[in-house]
Length: 249
Image 1 (tube, rainbow, N blue to C red):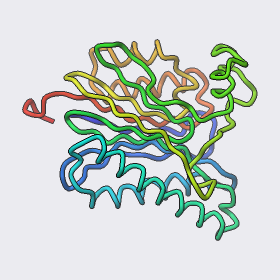
Image 2: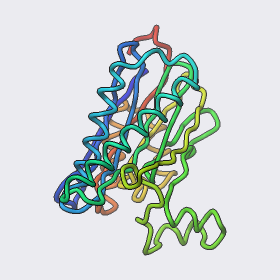
Image 3: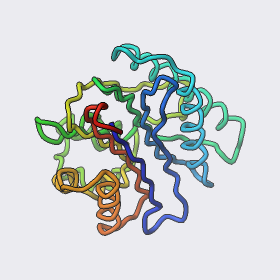
């Protein structure tokens, strides 16, 4: 397994409120995370940084992830814990009032990946079936698409595209989605903030991911495309590629 994390401020924003990383537990299992912070007075970067720091610390002490159930329980318990931390920090620090963050996190073993998400940061999988999004955006616009009120094409340019229905840290209780997918040799997982998915189409992503380049070059090219298309938002991504551990990595 190989993995790479990249984050870019973009061409417009003064600060990068995204955060993320790839972390290995004491058992050698990887946790990949992308968090897109939000809130005034730079509180967004506080929310995303606190999220990453806390999950990284707790992941270092985690046990073996032998089944998808193990992974799902860890994600649910620890993301709920972080939600409480963020909500309390926001309530006790006026400059952070209303802060929150999206999160998409994947526990990656050599047999499966279990993904949890809240908000509109996404996870995609490239495998023998093609390239597809495996998370659902928790956004107003996606709900309008799902209920048939607007088309996917309308959603691309909707004026309320940035309105989230769920985020981490903004409510006392949080609801997340989880999904587990099996892994085969050569499969690639992409986690990203909306600074990438709003600017780079799925066909463009697929073109980059299937090129004969290494993971770092793929990541750099995806960020370059988002900036070429305007770069109005911070751009953050993780790429995870699966292959036989006996061959290296």
